[in-house]
Amino acid sequence: MTLPRIGVFDSGVGGLTVLKAMAEQIPAHYLYFGDTARLPYGTKSADTVARYAIGAARFLEAQNIDLLVIACNTATALALPQITQAARVPVIGVVEPGVAMAAEVSQSRSAIVIATEATVSSHAYRDALHQHGLTAYEKACPLFVPLVEEGWIEHPVTEQVARIYLSEAMAASSDTADVLLLACTHYPLIASLLRRITPEHVKIVDSAESTARVVRKRLLEDTTRIEARPSSNPNAALAEHRTFRFFVTDSVDKFKRLATRFLGRQVDHVEHVDLGG
Amino acid sequence: MTLPRIGVFDSGVGGLTVLKAMAEQIPAHYLYFGDTARLPYGTKSADTVARYAIGAARFLEAQNIDLLVIACNTATALALPQITQAARVPVIGVVEPGVAMAAEVSQSRSAIVIATEATVSSHAYRDALHQHGLTAYEKACPLFVPLVEEGWIEHPVTEQVARIYLSEAMAASSDTADVLLLACTHYPLIASLLRRITPEHVKIVDSAESTARVVRKRLLEDTTRIEARPSSNPNAALAEHRTFRFFVTDSVDKFKRLATRFLGRQVDHVEHVDLGG
Image 1: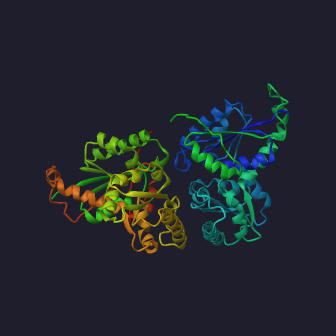
Image 2: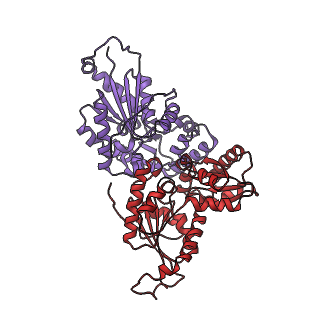
Image 3: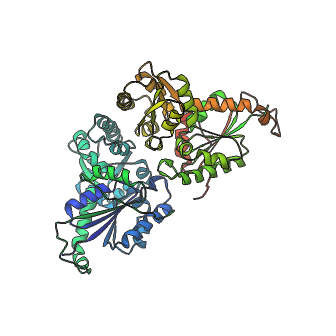
């Protein structure tokens, strides 16, 4: 059986949690593209973000991918339709899977969304939740990304910060929400910590995990098409195998250090690419 | 007397602490340029940073400035010579003033430099301190900027983080340092907190404050030249007056909110400019 080739795109390292969740569920060749030289996307216009993401899509398509995952909340929120239209392979974004899962598990029809300031300002999650009939309270948690990148995953400071953010979010949502949606790809790294301090009746939905499920479902539907793709050596790749390639536009060293932490496995080989301005 | 016109350049809001320190010492017309659409500079190449800074210098020169302050550690560390060469007015960077002050007050000839990861990686402060005969221990404190931008100035979380960073820095410097150099323009906002938890024998040198002193000295030397500049209404500007204009390349609203906090005065009017790619 030929393994599918999955392209994963993010502005930085956050999308690695989506890659990790997929790798746990789906045997595949993974090609990860981190546009680290041009992050953060959160302050850029929709057109600029679309242009960058489409450039990355072209690069990954040239590596023969079967499917492209936009593992970046900003790119998904601002430019998913443009990317989908420009791409030659199916595209899956990171917003709708988490929202659909939240809608599936919520009984009170009310969710708290925690995310970066840029994602909250886009209101992409609020709007998508509305479409599923849920009210949403969005809370920006700007300290979580730097805390995760500092490596303070199980750390008293991170717990204290999380308690402050969560109590503000719960109070503002009048305690009606029964779902906490982790709408930033960095947050799965502190999911255990968040679980510990979140009231028991509140379910935690992780958009990385939810996206992995949607990708798996999509690949099972598309099996015929993907297996039909010619391979020079179809028997070499066993179903239980996963392979990884990493491409970044900025410093390879910083990416390696963070990637090893995010993936929970040593990342030694990262390739630098330059897509220009 | 005609007030001098001082251009202040930074990639974002941090340089506002330099502006504040100057405004407390120097009556002047201040023109602040925050290249917020293109921050952070820390991940960009020296040539790119030089190009951006020179673009901003040209814009400020068109507003008739007498002096340009590069209130940005990254731009100073990476591109001060290029900016100085390209500019038509005198240019003062933010590294050398703090280093000179540290060299003036240190008796042990050893300093701790706290800064962002990008500034630490550039080793600009270490190299400049070496030139003054001081050994330097550099400590990256990546959580301070997001804590300050979150507004957690006098906050138990910030104090806890600061205690961790400082104890690591003191230990690594073998407790020989008698100067703590605040080498990030965001840090003056937590100077009181840092003073409270830093050993008494360690002097705190603030590069914003040090830069303001150097600018003041330079202007006093240049008084003749500046007073000679023609003014349509020389008597209108009184010596005790300061005026401010703010130009940013990205969201005006976020800048206004942060600027009001950084300057300790209401900032209502911010102009958006687009310098292109």
